[in-house]
Length: 417
Image (cartoon, rainbow, N blue to C red; front, side, top):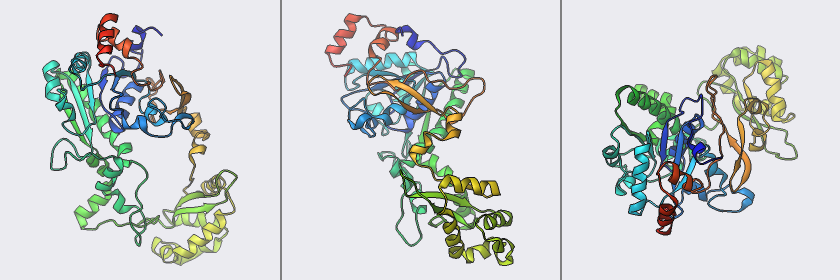
């Protein structure tokens, strides 16, 4: 592929022609920029080996060997981007960064508030260079307020947003929600706002600054609980796998296999009809007719007995067998799948969810595609996440207009480290 063709806008994609300078790191910021790239934007990811992105140091590593270019986690969040190594601690590097801003439509930031401003790359600095620039910032707490300098990760954000207080059993300490939860829900709020900001700029010619608090974004997921407290003073508490309105509701043990003995199926019953269907499916037709079990309160009073009967039935089946039998009977049920099963899941395969892309260092491996399909302008895999600085030379030539002598001089000065 020629250097110039790297920057050619792909035909027929919604963000073709949109240009992004991506200073963001770790999770939320790069995820948003990645989805712009997936739908056609030209995204230049700016990094430095002198202070590498945390995700480049995070497992899983290809073949179990750590390295800045061997993290599958880091690569997946940067699919379809171009990689530029730029040591922003150096004045000459910052000059090049501002040159990129003149080229760009959008600049990204996910560092602790004030970090880019200290480098002369804050929003006010960028506006002086290009008044119509759009810049988004995504941080744990947002750019303002007493906790603006809080520099945590998604695990901390999930705790601050209230999720940990609600996860686990009422008689035990909080269990904690899986992973950096806010990292996986916050991007879509800012992504939507960014589309609106692009539309506004196209109509008015004016740029703007988008300031996201990841904690505030994640709190939207707790909307019903927050509304209940605001309206009724009723605070949601930890309840294990119970549900306030659905009974039975939980995960039930299933037969294992050679790869994993710890297998489960999730079951949720909403009403008397689904209860009758479940009772008949597990061989308890008498329960389907029992008047005392027709409402949620009656079933909750005998929850332990019912759970034991369901478990006795599910233990004789694999998760997928139990799911298929219950769904056929009209009972909401889903196999609790392992990571391995996701790669062979027929629904995901049918929808082309897994992209196999050839990384410059790690070689071919799986990348997840966007979860939504646009019928006329679908996302397309164009390139794997870049190795650190992989496209530096091409960007210097095609975007920054530098010749080989200038590139050599800047390289010797440590600008591209």
